[in-house]
Image (cartoon, rainbow, N blue to C red; front, side, top):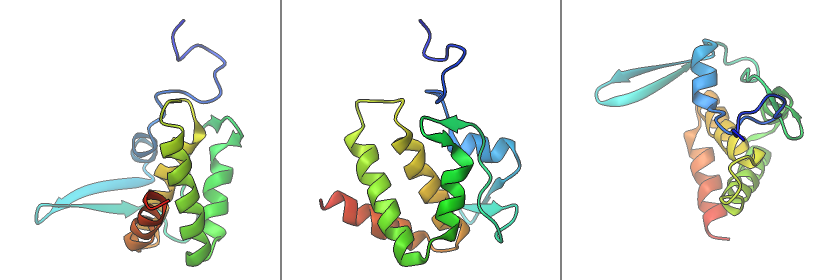
Length: 124
């Protein structure tokens, strides 16, 4: 049976960046050999589509948007750690949770928040 059979709540092939780019939520450009990420609207949560194993993906993005930077780092650390722990389960929501945390840090203009969370998660 194909992993993408009708009715699967969390598509194994879900690609956060592909979703964000196809919806116009994110655009990428190259400048001086560096990839630049631009968001359609930095004043609201990142818009994501679909339903994960725990409900609409948008609800997770909305919760991230509301967090302070310190609470965001804690949540991202948890998502990164759980994504690594679930490496044997490609259908785990934790993979796209970690990805959306990355883009949320970029949306805030604070990529260092994700890097801090990653360093904390990798030291556990």
